[in-house]
Length: 409
Image (tube, rainbow, N blue to C red; front, top):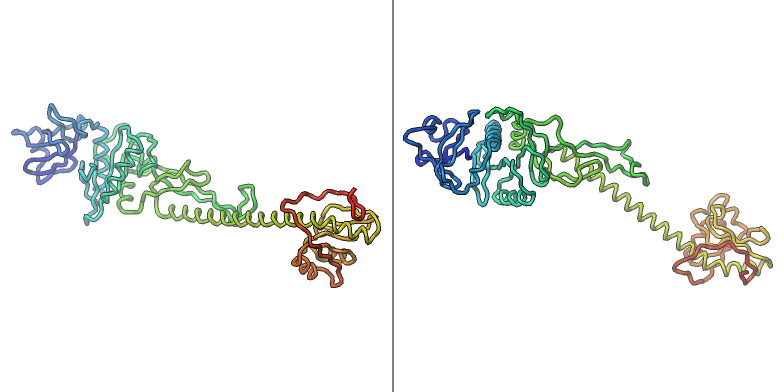
């Protein structure tokens, strides 16, 4: 049942204000004789003024009314529209009820004092799908009219569209806009950072902390009057929140304030920094693994000719042992437990004791660049032998075997 009506002479009448419009008092409409010429703004059928048992003024369709979207409105729906209109007016904006637009109709249309801004407030107490609300929201926004959907039940579409859920008192008064509390649809971002902004919570390599903040509803619940005033003033806005750690199950729309948007953005930037750090760390790890694979390939290709040379010169069995830091991760070659050569050691590990240990040994390399690097790292008189060998693409780990000059047993 509508809260507005079209009067043949006075124009649009609004039952939520006094006078109703163009100086028409309620007493001149309700039970007036002769009857006031009222029609429905939606369907054009005749209306008459009525009072609910609790004193709420509204208009009812005359008998034999056609199908009209306003016919089935419940008392709770009308009361919520009244509360929204009252809150809008308290915020200093104009409130018009049941206003039709281009393919849409607003339960309550708020208009700024200078007339430059409009916003729709929809009392949505009946069941409806999120897809329907998204489509209706898009139609309103196409007309330059943002919307907030208001319900008093838990609905899955809260967060899919700009919406709030309110809690009403058990016995609401018709004019008590402050009785309603906003209990869902709002959000504040609680930031959380690791000490010194370094993070090891993910169990991986330490790096910049991405932040561990999360969104939660505003507690305690906000008065509907305060919420509406904040939205119309611009201090409260609809924001597409991002699902973060311990956060929302998925991205959703929340009503929040600018500081919380900035705090979320700070954490998102920190997440980007952590991702960049991890990507660089992964790239470095891949480069390191590739270098190890290349080193194994060179050692695998160099070991047979190196064994042959050492065995020929020493006239004895050649033992090939494991690469260890003691040999700068090169493959050591022994004859009668005496080290005589090292196959492709890691240049950066040749320093101090290792450098002196290599002084009397022969080092074996497979490339000119490796030869140049070893000459810079080793003692001036270091013997280095370059073998031009074919390096396999997929090296096999070197086995510990004992070889004689030129043959493998």
